[in-house]
Figure 1 (cartoon, rainbow, N blue to C red):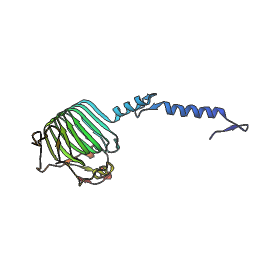
Figure 2 (figure 1 turned 90 degrees about the horizontal axis):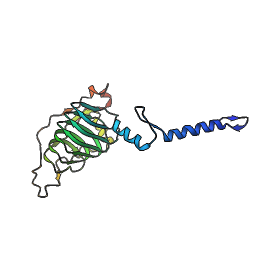
Figure 3 (figure 1 turned 180 degrees about the vertical axis):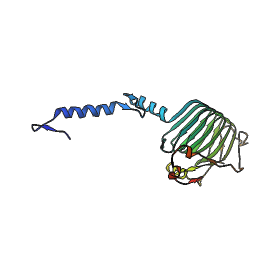
Figure 4 (figure 1 turned 120 degrees about the horizontal axis):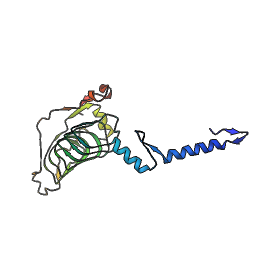
Length: 228
């Protein structure tokens, strides 16, 4: 509340409030304390700091439940890495991975996989699109038909992940577990539908239990351990 001095408005207080408000609009502080005056630079830094794994080798990279909260995410230039995105997300872009194992929790939009080789993916998403990939395996839940382009030796199987709170993440991403189109693959480079670039594996897939007990203190509090 603005104070009054001798019945008049306290203009010092007014100016102080206006200066603070202007600083709040123009100046932005990122989650790690870095300050920015440019809004676009702030947003770029925040995304690359919190919603990107890039240029890593021989590492385990983790985002725990609650650390993405429906935001987009990027993976790029990873080699011999294990990646766990154990939260619901928006669009996910995956580029230039080699010899990686990747878990992508429920994405409410498309997951793009490009220029990846010899990788194993477990993905839940609205739509999957691959381009320029070879020798990849995809354990998949997708609400719409998966699409591949200029990709070879792609093996699809049904979604095999399980962890605490997974059903709630499916709901947050507006995905329907019972409606999985993983078998309905469309290949842009195979107009005659020969299926020469991909195949389906109907063999029983061993469940991949995501080790939430190593990531969060009380995984049971997130919900039951299940593959919905």
